[in-house]
Image 1 (cartoon, helix red, strand yellow):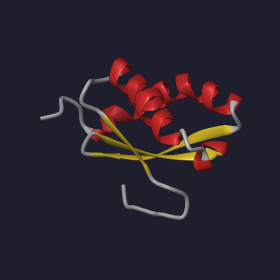
Image 2: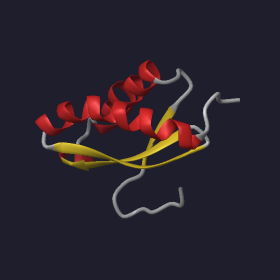
Image 3: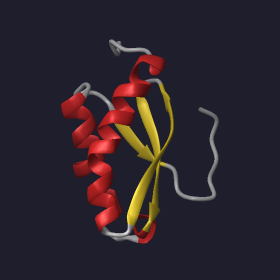
Image 4: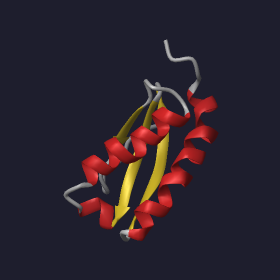
Length: 88
């Protein structure tokens, strides 16, 4: 069982995303936090990141790695492409 509630994760996740955002914006991209459900962090890669062939690596080795380091090793990040909507 994950040691934090989704609500408890919100502020630490936002803080971690702020750390990685400057790297994304340097390449013309950005990231939006859509929600957190069952310790899964749902984001949308924006701008140049949306269509970049390296976006999966950015998500896994950039965003998710930062969250695992800052918060918990079992946290997971899922990209929801533009146009898709989910309930969080």
